[in-house]
Length: 109
Image (cartoon, rainbow, N blue to C red; front, side, top):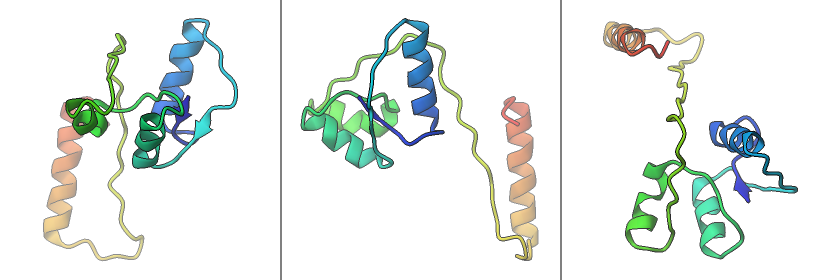
């Protein structure tokens, strides 16, 4: 099984899904790059859980096969970051405020 690095949402979700279903495995191949994971799967080194968006082209071209997982959608957390001493000008401050409002309205904060 190909997996993202420790702490990635897909590694955590995969481990939880397998544990919840009594499936165990040893020595996963840990890769930190989506392209490397896709290439390894294409070369028949194993399977991986990845975002549908990440593998859409490979599935469409039939280089890979997607198996939908019937489970609630995964949620990802993103952070807006900046250098701590950077002056935040008005347009960036407005964008930051808008993103905060959008996240709060969508229950993402």
